Image (tube, rainbow, N blue to C red; front, side, top):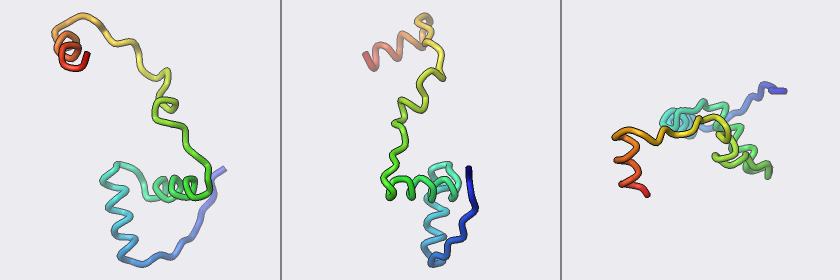
Length: 73
């Protein structure tokens, strides 16, 4: 359950925090929530766990696959 929270911060810090969030493509609320989770000791699942099962198997045919395979394998 999400709840509203009113926080008072320095105006320069707010400006920098908004810029930081915008550059990373997240909302300020999610940035604050993630920071609080870190400070409170609640770890978020790793990237691999958050995205597990959301992608289909890569196609192994075609020029693009061959170029990527030569580059990275």
